Amino acid sequence: MSLLDVRDLSIVFSRRGRRDVRAVDEVTFSVAAGETVGLVGESGCGKSVTSLAIMGLLPKRGAAVGGSIKFDGTELTSLPADKMRGLRGRDIAMVFQDPMTSLNPVIPIGLQVTEVLRRHRDMDAAAASKEAASLLERVGIPDPARRLKEYPHQLSGGMRQRALIAMALACKPRLLIADEPTTALDVTIQAQILELLKELVVDSGTALVMITHDLGVVAGMCDSVHVMYSGRIVERASRWELFEAPRHPYTAGLLASVPRLDQARGEKLEPIPGSPRDTIPWTQGCAFAPRCRNRIESCTQGAPELVADKLRPDHDLRCFNPIDVAEQEAVTL
Amino acid sequence: MSLQVAESAIQQAEHADEAGGGLWREAFRRLVRKPAAIIGAIFVAIFVIVAVFAPLIAPYSPTATDLSQIKGPGHIPGPSSTHWLGLDDLGRDVFSRMIYGARQSLVVGVVSMAFGMVGGIILGLLAGGLGGWVDATIMRFVDMMLAIPGLLFAIGIAAMLGQSLVSVMIAIGVVNIPVFARLLRGQMLAQREADYALAAKSLGVKRSRIILGHVFPNSLSPVIVQGTLTLATAIIEAAGLAFLGLSGADPAIPEWGRMLADTQKFLTSAPQLVFYPGIAIVLSALGFTLLGESLREALDPKNRR
Ligand SMILES: Nc1ncnc2c1ncn2[C@@H]1O[C@H](COP(=O)(O)OP(=O)(O)OP(=O)(O)O)[C@@H](O)[C@H]1O
Ligand code: SF4
Ligand SMILES: [Mg+2]
Image (cartoon, rainbow over all chains, first blue to last red; front, side):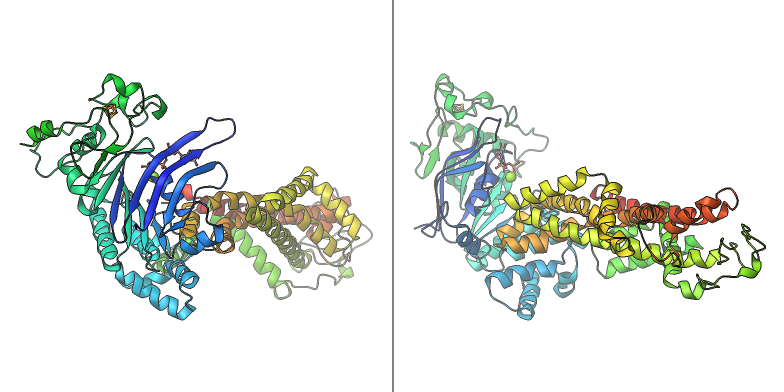
């Protein structure tokens, strides 16, 4: 059985005087213990709200969560708030996008790290601060004893993200959700942080849900990848499969817009035309249709379902007219 | 001189920042670069020093009379080498009375501000922390208080509690409660949505701890700015109440508002007697206002480097 089982998740935001927003729908995926799973898609496709739903952190009012989220067999969507709080930080933890704002600016780093330890690991102040120092050391923060006394603004962005990762992993959670953990950082720091995350989850056997808009991030670390568009998963495959033979036109578009080492210099990247806002509701057809080069007539007459790919095993697809594997091989050759 | 003070303060602040420090230290560093803040700080410093060390500075007792100088009924001696600011109608040394008056004003200002701030923080914390019907009830109450004009409200309370300095301080304090409550509650509601609060939640930190340990300390800076500004208005309000005869203090105890009230009848014959307490009230209030406004700017995240 898998560690995390998300089935048919839907998230609907409703606000008075406005139309309901179905931010996420029909999202199904699972994560096995120790596995690293990528959730990829452009801005606004519902990656963050999906992770907040798993964490039970969506606002209670105005956000309706449907479907099921099972963690180690426990249904999270109906779990009482105090039980959920007991899980958070101990069994499931999260790293957020912006390390500049995710730390409390008026409290020293040390107190923020020890807070988690004292909450979940029943440590006294002395033991907690010792453990905090070794945690910071583990995430590669030099001179941890001094850093613990410092305030967030005295640390660089990369250091802060390291501290936040240390906090998230303080209780050796079984599942870590990283929501674009490197997007706010300098390019050189990005690679270091990803490397660190990879190393830590392997060391501790933590399962990782890596949320990103950057397929380059996925390429380096994920076992399997789920590509989301406009609130739904449109393609799912192993990392190799997805990079070798993307079948969904959206995935192919994302891949084409990632700079590659084997690319001839000066060769133009091909961005996907239009923006994520050029979409149609799934009820009217494929949401990607307005931007899709492979669009056929049936694409705007009804929504495609996520089904197993006929041509490839272990590959799911939500598309009426996927990219031909033969055609692709021709391109790669 | 002041430039040197400012410069060494900058150096000190920068040094301190290396050693560790927070939001406030950073704000302080920005603060010492503002001329308005320096001027305000100088006024406030003079005011506080004079108030604290009044017995050491004042050449005479504030109640001692020197009738030898009074040459007849209605004669009010002006400044001289023995009495720098002259004497008042009862032959008391005005300079000494002004100095002791600073003491009164500082006590009234600080106590009534503290009263209002503590009251406001309690209400604001309950409203912003608990939310729901507690918030709704408290805020309705606060709005009601805000609807009554401040000075009128203070006069009412002071009259109700009887004429004494304590009732003046309570009156001014009560009048200031809603401002602090509103400010803190609004700030807390905003800070509850901040990323660090969500991050703390994601670590399973308990709600009460997030509110008290994270949201509350982050919501305090505008309250402290307001406290500084309130010192200014409290001094003016106290003077106003004294002027209206509500402070009830022993007339022998010098108090700037009261001195202003008692001497207005000499406005034509000895205008200096009205001028001194008037200018003292204005300058001390100005000092706190300059300091408070500069502090507000220094703490504003928008102005951060
Ligand atoms: N509190 C909310 N109320 C209403 N709609 C919301 C709310 N939060 C998110 N949404 C909607 O849900 C959709 C998905 O948002 P989400 O933040 O999950 O996107 P994302 O994939 O994480 O994008 P990004 O890459 O920008 O972080 C958005 O279209 C947004 O409009
Ligand atoms: S369903 Fe049609 S429009 Fe949608 S991605 Fe596939 S081909 Fe393009
Ligand atoms: Mg997001």
